[in-house]
Length: 225
Length: 236
Image 1 (tube, each protein chain N blue to C red):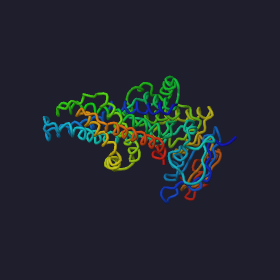
Image 2 (cartoon, each protein chain N blue to C red; image 1 turned 30 degrees about the vertical axis):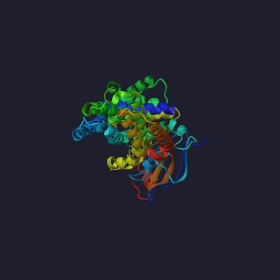
Image 3 (cartoon, one colour; image 1 turned 45 degrees about the vertical axis):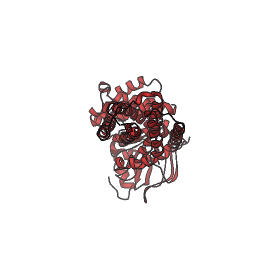
Image 4 (cartoon, one colour; image 1 turned 135 degrees about the vertical axis):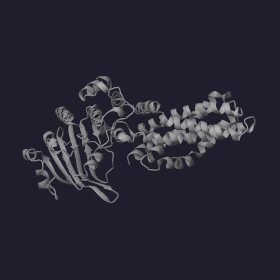
């Protein structure tokens, strides 16, 4: 079977389980919404500054909410030793890793969609001025977070302190991606598409390509060795 | 004809502890080999190394001529470990459909239905596995392992949690698989059942090969004979 199809089947299986149990979706969604709600009491929604800090606020919520999703990704395979069954099956390690990243990508996009509506409502920010560009930024940045989260989720799956270790390991590596996503989101919220936007867009693209290639190439080592 | 399963002087360490020590074994195609040994002898380690789930440090392994982690080896091997390897939040049918599809089985519906019938889970095929008893889960795990008709079956204590009827069913599955040309290596503590099913026996003690050969009538009549003759501690 085509490795991409295998990855899609792994993602389909994980999403079916997640939509039944809603374990990570509820946790990540609730976390993002509560953080946005709490900060809405700190900042004056009428202040023009809100748009300048909006990107940072949103991407911190997405990154922290994402950690709750990645932690469940491979942990879902632990009961009944399902990870062994998958690794011994014809599913390649890279397909398995890519499947987990696709699952996290979809779940995180759902959390982001909900968060954006909450953000628009409580902060009075018109985030929908450039919907396609905002979607492109979200998709590129979310894939980068998802592939890195899946790779490190696989590395930390057998650690007792994986809930703590995973964020500690991935956030330093996510810094360039988060900087780019925050800058681009701020520009879009302030309706200022500058020449810098293209540069930050390239940073996101290169980040995605580099980490996706590394994750796929090292999947076998990460998962088996 | 080259052996289906071949281990040549394999060493496997956990830290400094050698779990497999210079282990050499050959299982011919179509043989059913019972892997016997006490708790901690290295049976599970041996099966995990063969399934490509645990790297080994020295020696050589081939499954039908392929390296354990190769795509061809994984496509032709069915592995049942201590865990049953099925998802609690999916139904039996969904579990089998998932594993059949990723194994590349086309038109997976009809073998899934027939396997559900065969392991007596057809009535409960659409309810989540978390509602199953332990024995039902083990039967589903067997169906998952046998589903793609693998040429090599690696089974780690497959009789666990099975009642008498299910053990009989398991014996039938193994006989049918062997009749279809499959090579089987299974570990168990249920020596009497093992002796009835197996054509060959291999005995492991502290990671070392103690015996490997044809299962004899003497072993069938007196299952303790093998341990008394070939282990340092004797008896079982």
